[in-house]
Each structure stands twice: as C-alpha cells, then as structure tokens.
Length: 401
Image 1 (cartoon, rainbow, N blue to C red):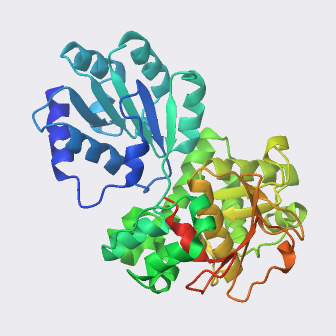
Image 2: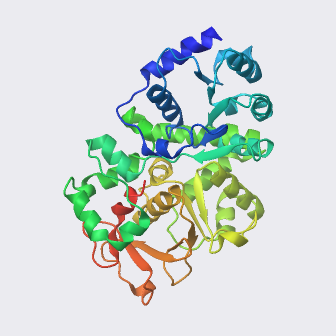
Image 3: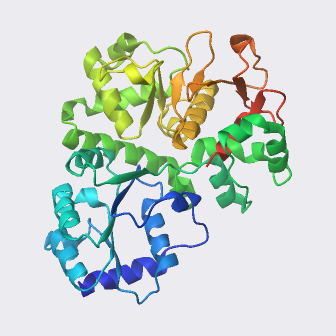
C-alpha cells in the first residue's frame, strides 16, 4: 500500500494545473461510483489528478490515485487494495485505466457492495470494455463521457484567451452579440482551421509534430487490439476495417450507400453495418439516423462521419473534402454537449437538433433555399465573421462547452 502512495504523490505533484477544463465542475465526484469514459488522449487522467490536487493536501491519506496498468497489479488485486485502503480510513479511491485489469467489473461490484463509505472514481480508454462492464454494474455506476477539446478550449490553450461557453439556445437567440464578443478578443478564423486539423485531442500540445501519427496509432490500437478482443473482429478483417475508415474519410456528405461501401472493402452488407456500430461505440465514427428512437442494430445509417475532423486529416489519403470537414465539426461539437442530433432529411436541411431546430451547414454563400419557410432553421456558415439573421459563423458552434 505504501508503494501506491509513493506513486500517488509523484503523479499528483507533477500534474499540470495551468488549465483545468470546466467539465470537471459537472462531475459529481462524491458519488459512490462514477466512471470517466472517453477515447485515449482526451484528458481523463489529468482531470482525476487535478481534482485530487485541488481538493486534498499532499499528506492526506484519505484519497488514493492508482493506475490499473502498472506492474503493482500483476501481484495485487483491486479488492486487496480497496480493502486495505478502507481499513486505514481511506474514503476516495481513484482507479485509472481500469479496463487494463481483467475482471475489473466483478471486483468493483464486490468493493462497492462491501465498502459503503468508499467513493470510487474509475477511468478507462477502452470504451468497448467499459461498456461491457456497465451490465455488471447496472444501477451502481454513473458514466461521464469526456469529449476532446472544443474550439473554445483549444483557443484558450493556444492563445490564453478566456471566453465563457454559451448555451445553444442563447447562441441562436443572440448570435451577433456573441460573435462580436469573441471578435473583440481575437480573430477566430485565424485559429479555426488549425483546430479542425489538429486541435481536438489535448496531447496536440505535447507533440505537435507527431500529432497525426499519434492519432493513426490510436486508431490502429482500437482496431487491432480492442475490436479483435472485445468485439470478436476476425484478425483477417482488420485491414478491411482500416479501409472502411479511410473510405469514410473521403466521403462527401450525402446519403450513405451501404451496398457500395461494402463492395469497396469486400465485406458483406450486414458485416459492414456491424463494424460501423462497433466503430461508433469506440468513438471513431458517428452514425446519424432520421429517427434515433426506431433504429435497430443492423439498420443503415443515413449519414456517417468520423468522430471529429482531426481524424479526417489523420486518416484521409487526400485533403479532406471541406464540406465533410464542416459537417463533421458541427456534429461533433453539438453531440459532445449532449444534444440530440438526427439527419433532417432530404431537402429539409442537414441536421435536426433536439427534434426542434434545423441546421444547414455550408460555406459563406450558403443560402436558405433548403430550409425556406422554417422559422426554426439556421445556417452554420464557414468563412464568415458576423451573424446575419439566422446565418451564424460555423466557428461559433465551437463555444458550446
């Protein structure tokens, strides 16, 4: 146990405190059992360590941070650690990379049931493994999905400029007022396209020159290790899944042709649909449907996007189509803040938000032709600085969190 506290001290004393994401304030850290869920590199570990440093003194032994992927857990169990920690008066146990520990959900369930005064915070980068553990911990585990950086957060880290997040309804009701505020502090267009290419994952600020290579490595790990292990992907089909992502990275934002997509990677239609579901579960893609409530496991999505525009630039063998980049950014930012996003339908606009608001995404010359007569319709336009009526700069939707 003392060995764990020595490592705890090293981790917590060295965590950077220059910027703390506001999402930390939305987490109920004192709930009995919570899990921070998100792709590798979005900052889950940093959030945990920053919270401990802010709320506990260095000598406080009521809190313990440990990582389940260290050698310590090759000879010790989670149950053993929790029992010893609780016996010594510990109240808050933070376990990072919990998915690296075989049988973690069973042991966490046992710990939860036996130590009622112990608060447990988990994190893991294998979304597939965490999702599987959710069944064992039903009615006990509270999940928090941690997204990558918003454009607003990227701007803060890149320039030091602090601008408060805005709710979607407030942006739509007074867009010009908000855009004027942002422009009084910076020229957002100067940084926006850089963000689209390389600003979503926080580790961009640690390795800018190898950023896209790190993204590609992360994608390969998900396919080669996680999908084969947790979703029984045949090793012989990993190449086809990589090809599938590459095809998606080059798709223009029109209706999806699953038959054509399947032929392009030489995989059966239903197998392709199954792979798409798993890729979304791993936060590598986003599937959109015209009606979320009625979708089945093997239903054809109406639109498919990579999870965020950075993946487009990392995986596409050519320069990504700008329309795809714009729509990928918009869907990612809106979905990350918890809004319901659906395909609006042919000739009705691009996206239906929360069953009420229609958004059409495009360039500076985009007009209202597709959404004419719809008072709840707006245009998110790239390469403009000011809002004009219901036409709002695309970058403004990057300030929602």
